[in-house]
Image (tube, rainbow, N blue to C red; front, side, top):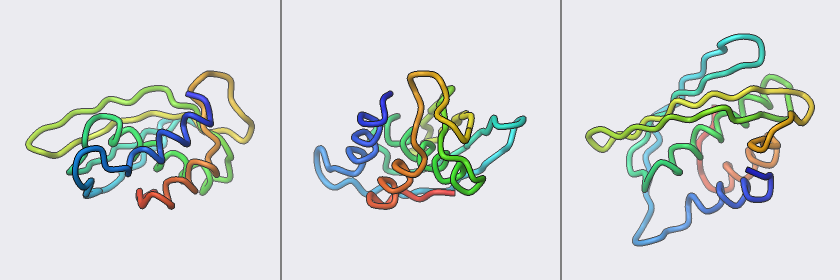
Length: 123
């Protein structure tokens, strides 16, 4: 996803589609898998679908990259499940100081700013 469409996706996640969107963010667990490979497990209630959960994980990845002194992340995968109204996401990203190759890269500073503006919690 390009940086421009990524920022739009993050911004769209809090725009009500049908009725009020009132998500409850239940937490983020971060695990450094190896080197610059990081896994984010997120949980939330009130998601409208998989995209809301993926956006939450992306916000966590952006903030984590900034905390570690990196400016970019590349999305590798996100698995989303829902059971009993609780949505869970398991996302894996690589973080880096320079813009990584690939189509699903994010500028951590831009994404973190959009997440903050939209009230999506981060690490």
